[in-house]
Length: 442
Image 1 (cartoon, rainbow, N blue to C red):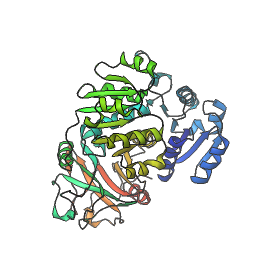
Image 2 (image 1 turned 90 degrees about the vertical axis):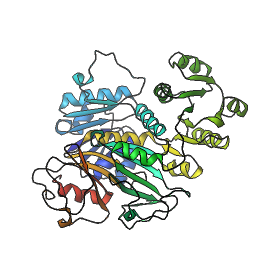
Image 3 (image 1 turned 45 degrees about the horizontal axis):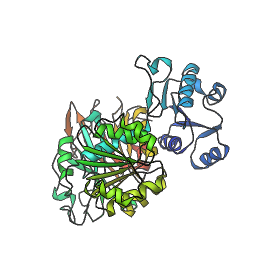
Image 4 (image 1 turned 45 degrees about the vertical axis):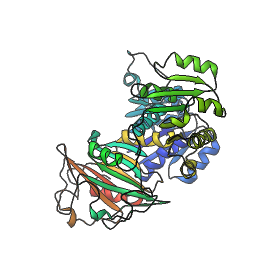
């Protein structure tokens, strides 16, 4: 497989890095020379300086032989033109990042003009936050196997019933499995001997309803009914539209014109013109009584400060948008419950779309050391029709779930992989190549 990534910012870099680690040939097109040099030093990819919307540059990048072009610059227009030009030059599939406000009339089909798939980072973040608020004990939620499997992240607190318990004690329902545990800066692919400690962040997988019940019992979090959103970005407005159908929502922004504009868009959300530094206003608007506070401005400092202030004034759960991915752990260490990066979410979203061969989806865990992947074997895969206990499997690799004819199987040593199975596996990043070999994906 051969992929062209247009845009060498953090989103484009993360996508290129994930592709390179999967053994995929990658060309990155980036306008900024210093950024080109930086990317060249970090990953094994060809980097070309230039405008990805320029057919000459795309030709130089080998567009006629490319299986996929992913355009993720900060300009929706450049991304769309790159895809259209690339398709005309022979690229098989194209993906474009567009802004939420970049809308089209219903009678325009992007696929007919050369864009196979378009997505908005803001929309991805809005949906991520909505899922978290719907299941407040979870730090993150992902769907796998076409929605048949849910993966949720939860934290083991000082009062957790799992504290000091080993997995072999069957502390979770039979239909679920723990795929990975993040312990401080390390990721553990657990065996039955693993014992939970305070502060562990665990990833549980299983049938959606069963996982949701487990997560609901992980803490004393009550159902989210009242939400306050800081910032009137397009992402924040989209989130408010989604939440106001079932929750009481207040949105605060300091721009009077913007507040008036969005108050016409939002039907039930109370839009308030105000400043995060105005403590009297925040108290009057009941910030201490809301179940969740979400800060979605483009400024990391403001998002951090507003979440800490909300916690100080009594808010139960805080969620912050983080542009600088290196600050995610800092936000969480400072007391923010959930820190969400548009760049990481976007990279994972695109990787799930790509579906490299039989690799149907890929979720990289927060510290980047391990992944949860979903894949199917090829006809001649080494792993097929053999009991798992007879296969020489590397350490730090765990078969989590086999989806077969809409049935979920938690695999044991005697289970076998069949041709049409969807298999979900957790593994350290360095073991992914070995997994692909076992499944016939080279």
